[in-house]
Length: 292
Ligand code: R5P
Image 1: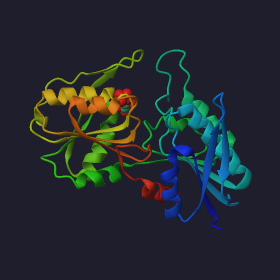
Image 2: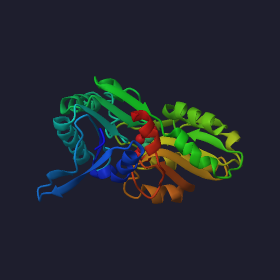
Image 3: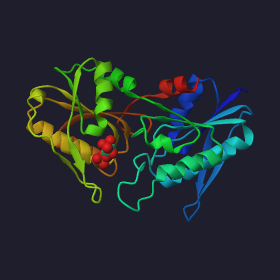
Image 4: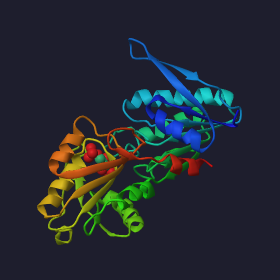
């Protein structure tokens, strides 16, 4: 038996399997039974190493259910292994990292306490929304980026005079990093979001430099699609050529994908932190490097 075990949550099974192959670890999967009242009963299938366990699960929808699952997996792992590392490719709640409006609870602070008390000694995440989120954790943290993996995909496409675009100022550094790796230039738009309704607006006015160029809109998360749709509508008015979207975590809630395509996006490419139709980029190698 290997000295390493990968314990997989239900939301990340194929990524966990890939990871276990890459780091030569035993693979342990979860079987879930949901009771009529919504409670989950989790049973682990496989043997857990005494030395080190990696618990892998994204906190993707159903967010609160997956959160309870991952904390349960860590607790069980810690009963068997002396070291437990939590790999949370998509960190749900990462956008609730500060008090935007008075009275709001900073849920990332709560998560910081829960992961520690469950028994994780380290947490690894992929492209966390903002570095502020991990400041609420007192255990070791590591944020790895999927940008080189996403860029690898886009390098295989033949694009006309490509330009990297961030839909907002918060994503400027991400766009810069993507552009550096892709060997192109970048810009970032100005976006505002109403903190109560969640509605977004693009404040940027005219943009000559996008005219007749293929664009890659880069974002960390697509949830409702609002940010990408508004940016696309604006960029189309500026007479750009095709618009591609590169994002790490494609939540694509409700019919977001359909709405984004309708707005004029040629293709959405995401990673398998959240498995789905758009998750064409595998990040298991990047996670494996972060663990070894
Ligand atoms: C915001 O700052 C994030 O980077 C994403 O742009 C945002 O969370 C995406 O959400 P939505 O798709 O609902 O606009």
